[in-house]
Image (tube, rainbow, N blue to C red; front, side, top):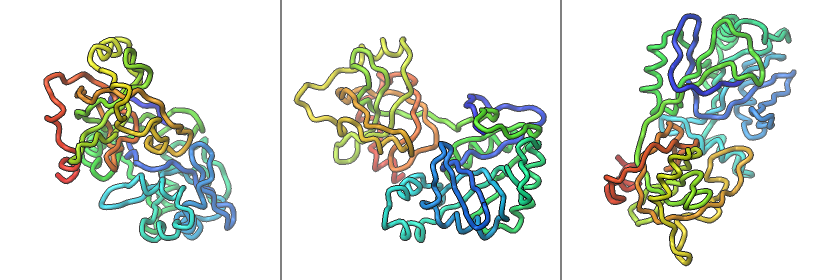
Length: 322
């Protein structure tokens, strides 16, 4: 079951709120001694998470199917890069598992220990059964917090973002589990900041999206993120503000932009772009999925900041160390 994005936290009777974790969504199937961890796109993740597979095998009865989020904790917050590194680790995987163990945060029970499907049961019933199932579970098999208090949910969005919580997922307590349907709602915690435009997709005269970054202490423009598609009015406005770099000028980043810079597990491809002179400061809206100086999700362009010069922005290392 999926969640549709909304801008405002829904309130009302019969709603439950859960933190939206910065990890990989995964189903866990226990079939006898066999464990399968499956991504939202149907990819088998089991071999990359042998630690989670062992925990599920030891703590969950046969026949059970769980829904949850794979996360890795580092320095007091979730570390998405450590999740990604498992897929490409190869022979280094056992070392990553030892030093950066994964957790499975479970928020739904789809099949019980008798092999009975719970998809048609109300969320409140599934939650009660899941709570009982995980009562004595080890620390790396975590029952996702849930509340019916919107004030508590708003507090999570305000205070838990430092630990890697991206926002809140909202569900109806009387709802059944409907695979592939966007019957839940998700609200991301967002804020705004300023960055420098270093490139555009499309053309300089009619930009489709902006590629933005900040300068570091060595004078390099570091890539930080890509915007959502621009509206027609924004394209016209930016056409007057961005300037193409001279043909022989060095580009700020590799061209095309490497697929790995987008932070996605599946479907990412290298991105062709047109470099522009890094002189325009823009204000963008961002979420909390930020690590290693990049936003994994697309950011939202808000407006040009013609009152700010590039030198007015903090250097990237100075901001990271603050």
